[in-house]
Length: 88
Image 1 (cartoon, rainbow, N blue to C red):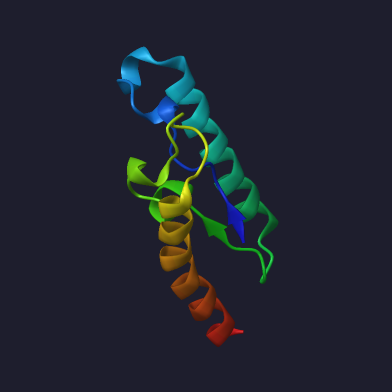
Image 2 (cartoon, rainbow, N blue to C red; image 1 turned 60 degrees about the horizontal axis):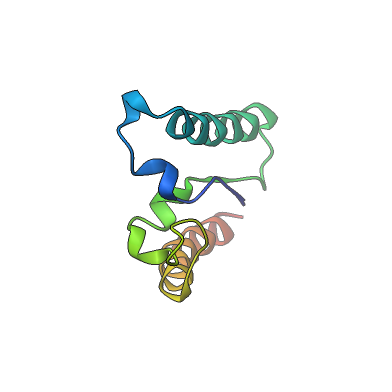
């Protein structure tokens, strides 16, 4: 499972005004593209912001994942893994 960048402080600014926002989005898109281009049966892309959809999962620095974030990620990632394993 290739997981893109999770949300961070970079995602809080206005998209049009923030170069860091665009860089984070580009990195997510590049990983997704690489997974698609490799087209391997056991390689799956997961969008980080879908696995941790709220900023409450971040620590005080709005960069590192806190305890709540790890719980969020597990709750969203487990069904994805389960689905892929059942299809194998």
